[in-house]
Length: 174
Image 1 (cartoon, rainbow, N blue to C red):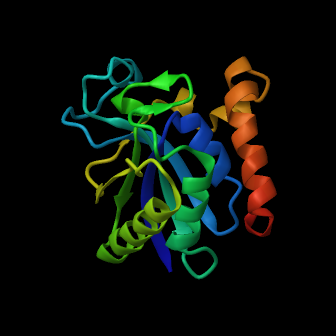
Image 2: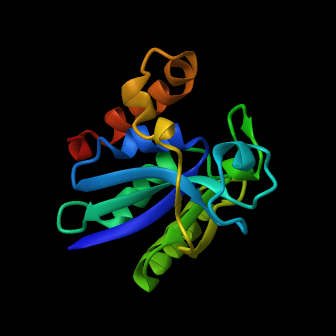
């Protein structure tokens, strides 16, 4: 059965690159969600005053990979304990967020956050909400890592996240 979930975990290039490699994921589209401006541009979102986060909308076959599995990967590849920041990317547009497409996904995400909060000394700051309007990013941002693997940001930031994913979730790599 095809489902959709939308995740924000810092720069969408990083999150997109990881989820494109997950077995059972059928589509990954970079974009924006969670704000109050219709059809935002990358430049507007980067200014940090649109309310939008950089997100990836993931279409997946739940018979192959579950929403729970995707969230395990999500929490492993970014720091859900830092508010509005992932590494050197700072601002509300880089916040950690889960935009669920169903009540079931919302419950799964809440349960994961509760469990993770028991394991760490800092609280999980991941925003949890039902999916709102999704605005696809400009085409230049789609498949960014695949098109630009030698770009310095990709080498320094995206590549380590991919390596972490492949190490800890080898059975999920396509």
